Each structure stands twice: as structure tokens, then as C-alpha cells.
Amino acid sequence: MESLASMSHVFDNLPQAAAAAAPADTATRKTAPRPLTRNKLLLISWFVPAFVLVVWELAARAGYLSIHVLPAPSKVAATAWRLIQEGRLISDMGTSLLRAATGFVIGGSVGFTLGTVVGFSRLAEALLDRSIQMIRAIPFLAMLPLVIVWFGVDEGGKIFLVSLGVMFPIYINTVLGIRQVDPKLLELGRVTGLSTITLIRRIVLPGALPSILAGVRYALAVAWLALVIAETIATSSGIGYLAMDAREFLRTDVIVLTIVVYASIGVGSDAVARLLERRLLAWHPNYAASGQP
Image (cartoon, rainbow, N blue to C red; front, side, top):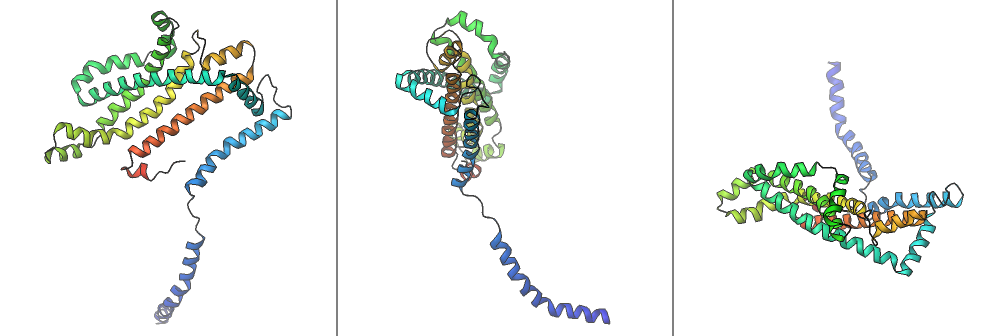
């Protein structure tokens, strides 16, 4: 009986306990951290590179870094300004960008076409895929002597190397994207009477687009890597030539500048690819709400 009385006392006090707990819950909700806004995330993403630059500059000015090993960022910036005034940096950047863009368009078109054909047809896969994978397995640098024999030191060899590097990421991701389209959606399209062309346009390609765009982003990085290798072949223009020429005279400031230029162009092209991704995949909840900085 005593325990029943104590339980009755507890039940009698439940409303008061709930009333006391309610303000605590409200206080907890008020003190919960708010999610960071997109602008704040953007600032955070640039904080680390800016911090590294400041430390680098201070270490160079304090004498911890030799100018012949790693010149200060201010020295590199002064060299960039001098080369811009001479017209050399802009000219070499334009040459490199033209080579990369031409190779990307050619290699991307070939990779997308082959990937689409192989993705839709098992017969085409049997005919083409093994040969493509064998070419993909060849080390990139092993192709250089043959490319020089085929194209000499003209622009054709450099564009060929960039095209070859770009083709495989787009080919593989296109095949993968087409094969990963949900079979239930394809069946639904057929049941509703969509023609083959409409089925491809409305279901297959939109479903494969995330994978294809991932291949484009990867191919952009490979394009710059291939361009660096291609511009080590005898040439008289381009960012790679600028770096090779600077190496002869031990101009580390120019060498660091070319590395910064490559990195800046790579980051810029990736930002364009991300923008393209958000625009073309606005219908996809994961991409529309990502808000990546």
C-alpha cells in the first residue's frame, strides 16, 4: 500500500514535472548551434590557403626559407607582374589554355561517344571495351617517344596527349552512368509508351548525368596533368616551356609562379564544372541542396 501511495504521489506531480521540463527543452532548442551559411563556409574554405600564404611569407622574410629554394609569395607576385607587363605570361597562358581546350573537346567527344555506344550495346562492349582498356593500361609517359615519332614537336603531339588523357575518364563514367540507371524507371517508360529516343532523352541520359559530370571533373584534372607532360616536349611557348626555361637559369620564382598558374587554372576549371553540375542537376535533391562553396 505504501508503494501505491508513493506511485500516486508521482502521478500527481507529473504535470508539474512536465511544466518544469518544458522551459528546459525550449532553452536547449534556443542554445542549439545554427548551421553555417554558404558565405561562412566559403570564407572557411579560403582561410587555410590564406593562412599558409601568410606563414610562407613570414618564414621567407625571417630567413628560414632561401630564395633559391622557395621564394616568398611577394617575390613570386612581383615576378608575375613583370612577366605580365612584358606580355609573356598572358601569351604563354593563352597558348596552354588553347592546347588544353582543344584536347579536352576532342578527347571528351570521343570518350562520350564511345561510352554511349558501349553503355547501350553489349555487342559494342564486346567489340570495343577490351581494346580501349588495353590502351588505357599503357603508362602515359611510355607514349611520349611514339608521339614524337608520329607528330614531331608540333602542336599535334601535345593536343593528342591531352585528348588521350581526357578520353578515358569520360568514357568510363559514361558507361557506368548509363548502366546504373534504375531498370524500374526504364520499364515504367516502356509501359507508358515512350519511344526509344524519348526514353533515352528523358530517362537514361538524365539518370547518367551525375556520373558523366563526375567524369568531366576528373578529366579536367587529367587534362592539365597531360598538358604539363606534353609541354616538356621541345616547344617554344606555353606555361610548361616557361617552367623549363626558368629551370635552365635556376629562376625558382618563375618555376613557383608556373605551379601557381597551373593550380589556379585547375581550381577555376573545377569551379566551372561544379557550376555546370548544379545547373544541369538542379532536379536532383542532393545537388540542388548541396550549396558547395
